[in-house]
Image (tube, rainbow, N blue to C red; front, top):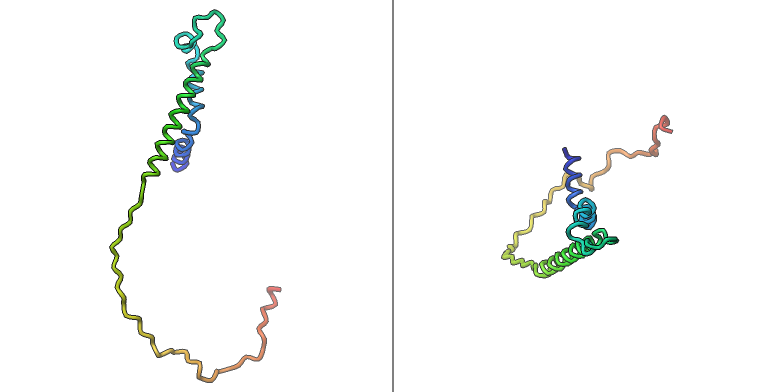
Length: 125
């Protein structure tokens, strides 16, 4: 389930970058209909355009819409301001008292002294 969700989210994120590809695929699917009805050179005997003029118009409209959307997004981001009004009142608290009793005193004499140096067990070597 998580794998499918990740794939769907990736497709949604990448969909705007493939906008011109979608326009081209739609053009190719309906190219014959476009040549017969919309194309500027449809009445010519030897039509060399094959509807590419309409494809160029569609791509130009798509790019113009994309620019308008980016411009409006820039305007919106410029208009967003963060107003942070905080009415925090900080109070001073009394410092924590220090305990005078420390159980491990250093003024006592040591119980034993080790003269030998530590050597690791030989079976690790």
